Image (tube, rainbow, N blue to C red; front, side):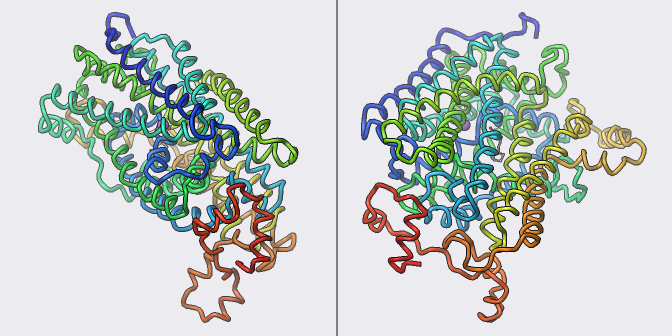
Length: 597
Ligand SMILES: O=C(O)CCCC[C@@H]1SC[C@@H]2NC(=O)N[C@@H]21
Ligand code: NA
C-alpha cells in the first residue's frame, strides 16, 4: 500500500479507541474490587454460577465472533458472493441440539470444566487428551484473533502492527486476570454493542456514499454476487448449501455444544433454564451479526466492483481491503473511523478474553487440581491468574505464527475449528450417545479423528487445492464468460488423493467427528464394550431410545440406553448442597445414596 493511499486517523478517533480500552479495563477493575473480589476459583472461573441469560447470551456470541468475522466475512462476500450467508441455516440445529441435549446433560453434572465429563464417562486419560486438544485448538485460534485486527489496520492505515498486537494482548490479559469470568462476560456484553454499532455505521455511510440502496442492489445484481441455492452435492465444492448448512452444523456443535469457552458460560448461569434460554437467545443475534457482515461485503462490492485492488493493496490480501473500504467510507467523519477500530478490537478482545479465561479454567480444573487436591483456594486462584497471564503472552507468540499462514483469516479460523474442534465434538458424541464406548475406544477414536483431520487440512494447504474460483471483480459479469473461466480450470481427471485434499473445509468438522465415532465404536467393541448402566449415571443421553420411540419398552431395553437423564437440579437443591460444589464424582454418589438417580 503506497503511503499516499493510506488513510489516517484524527485525534478524536484515537480518543474513541482509547475509551474502549479504558472501559474494558474499568470493568475488569470493578469486578476485581467488588463482590467476592475474585478470591475463589468459583468466582474467578465460574462467576459464582450467578449469571442471568442476557449477559450470558451476549457473551456466547462475542466469544466466537471476532475481528476474523468482521473482516473475513465481507472479504468472502466481495470475492465469492453471498453463498457463505447460508451458514445461517446451520445456526438452527447448531443451537437447538446444544440447548436440548448438551446443556441439560452437562449442567446437571455440575461441572466446572467440560472435560470433567470425559473422566466421568470414560477415564482420567480421556479427560487429559480432551483438555490438551482443546488447549491446542484455542491457543492457535487466539493467535489468529490477536493478529487479524492489527495486520488489517497496518495494511490499510499504516497503524503500528506489533505495537497494536502488544496493546491488545496486554489490555486483555489485564482485565481478564483482574476480574475473572464476571469481567470477561460483562466486557463481552459492552464489546458486542460496540461491534454491532461499528458495523451498522459503516453500512449506513457506505450505502449513502455508493449512491443509495437501489444503486447498491443494481450493482450487486449485475455483478452476479447474489448466490442462489446451490444444491450441488460435490463435497469438494467449497461453499454449497450442504457444506454450509449441514457441514456448518458440526462446526456450530463443536463451538456451542462442547467448546469449554461456551460450556463455561452455560455453567455460569444461575439455573439450567437460564442456560438453555441464553443458548436460544444467541440465535437472533448471531443471524444479525452474520447479516451485517454479509451486507457490508455487498456494499463494499458495489463501491469498488470496477476497480482492481492489486496495485492499491499490494501484496496484502483481500482482508486488508475491508479496512481500506471502511477508512475510505468514514474519512472526514470524525470519530467514526475510531468507532470502527473500536468495533474491530472489541470483537478481538471479547474473543481473546474468553479464550484466556477458558484456557486458565481447564488448565486449573483438569491439569492441576486433580494432582494437588490439597491446594488452598487462594493459592488455586493465584495460580489461575498466573495462568491467564501466561496464556496471554503465549498468544502474542501465536500471533506471529499466524503471520506466516498467509490464507484468508476466516479460512484459517474455520479450518482450525474443523480440524481440531471436530474430533473433540466426536469424543463427546461418542460418550453421550453410545453407551458401549469405552476409554480405549475414546482415545483411539480421538487419535484417528485428529490424524484424519490434520491429514486433509494440511494436505489441502500443501496442495493449495482448496483454492476456490474467484468471481472476476468487474461490475457487469455475463455469466457465459464467468462460466468459461470456471470450466477452464478443470485439468485432467484428479486422483482420489487430490480429491480428498480438495474436500471443502466446511466438512472437516463433520468428517473428523464421524471418524472419531466410527473408530471409537470399533475399538470399543474389539476391546470389550461397556454394558448399559455401567456408565456413570447421567453421562449418557438416551439418543437411540428417543429415535426408536416407536419400539415397545422391552425391545428398547434390549437395544440399548434408555436410562433417563438425571432430573433437573432445581435452584434450592443446589443451594441445599451448599455453594461449595462437591466434586461431581462424589456428588453423584451422594445423589445415588439419596436415591435421586
Ligand atoms: O469470528 C471468528 O473469530 C471465527 C469465525 C466464525 C466462527 C464461526 S462461523 C459460525 C459461527 N458464527 C459465528 O459468528 N462464529 C461461529
Ligand atoms: Na469476539
